[in-house]
Length: 139
Image (spheres, rainbow, N blue to C red):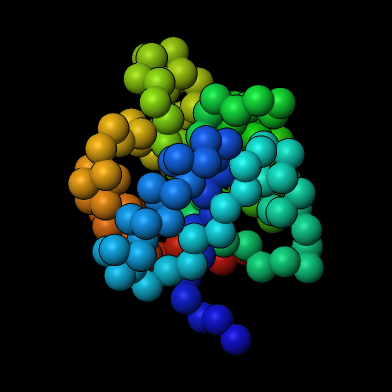
């Protein structure tokens, strides 16, 4: 049985998924990075009562079909998911997008890194803060 903490990455760009996976591997972070590429897949995964929830969700905003904003709206409707830390990682630095994401319940808004070194730094920081520093509420 795998007892490593789990991040769920919701990202439609295969290059960004590869960067995240490589950042976790190179950093030797002790976590499982599960990936889905659509908002619909994210909701299906998180609302499946037979599947354990991840510790943290990393959510892209701009995806075809169901956007990250729509995912945040849907997650707020499920009591089981209301305390789940959902962190937006987006290339948008629009004040309106940032404000809207927080209004919809995201716990952090992270600018998507433009280079691999920065991606590694962000993944290490997220791991340290969300898995080693704070105490997460369990469902």
